[in-house]
Every structure is written in structure tokens, then in C-alpha cells.
Image (cartoon, rainbow, N blue to C red):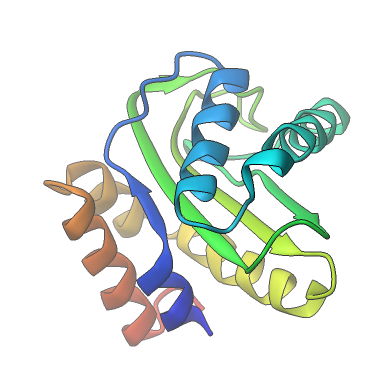
Amino acid sequence: MIAKLIDAAALIGELEAKTKGAALEELLAAAQTAGAVPANAAKALGKRLAEREAIGSTGLGNGVAVPHVKGDEVRRVTLVLARCRKGIEWQAIDGRPVQVLFLLVSPSDEPEVHLQCLRWIAGLARNSDFRRFLLDAADPAAMRELLRELSAKGASS
């Protein structure tokens, strides 16, 4: 499951967004481009993501945020991994700006897969080597290779 998620992940080498709202839009647009989210559903999913952030930030600390949403309109579980070296204010638990963003979108009828993926992402988020190497990766291909390497080693599970 995780290998398929990595292979199909949408990767953004450097977010253009400067705010949380703009970052969520950019991440969702990447999920849409990847074919996981139909164009007519992006706005509704974006609203749900914003509502989730209003309840409590998905900024886990250590410069990582994991916005996530499920919806009937989502075609398949999809990961968007992005970085923003300058950092985005995210109201993270530690107050630090976010530089690494994982967006996970899942169909509503796959809650267990959604949770499995979130557990895997949480492991990566806690891994200081992953965070450092991701920020140093030359391009999206190197970002994907890092995901594969850590997944194969079990360093993130």
C-alpha cells in the first residue's frame, strides 16, 4: 500500500504559497492534477480542509504539517508531499513555521487505509534525518527516492 502511495504521490519541490490558505489550495491543485480529486470537488474539499484547520492545526511541530481530508468524491488515496524552505506560518504545536507538508486525501469508504497512511506519515514527520534530507533534496525525483528508501528500511513505520 505505502509503495503504491509513494509511486503515485504528487511532489512539489517548492511551494509558491506564502500563507496556509494558499498552501492548502496549491496542495489540493496537485491532488487534482494527479487525478485523485475531480475539478468540481476541489472547492468542497478545500472548505473541509480549512474547517479542519480552524478546529486545530495540523502542524505537528518540527516544521511539519499533515493536512488530511476524506471525501466521497475522492477517487483514490493520494499523497501530496511539498516543501517550502522559507516556511509558512501554520499555528503548529511548537509555534515554528512549516517547511514540509504532507496532504493526504482519501475516499470516505477507506478509513483504515487513511489511518494506516497517517501512521506512516507521522513516522516520517518524527524522523529528523528525513526532514533534513527532504529539505536538501535536489528535485522531486530525489524527494520520491527518499520516501522509497525510508519506506524500504522501515525507518518510518
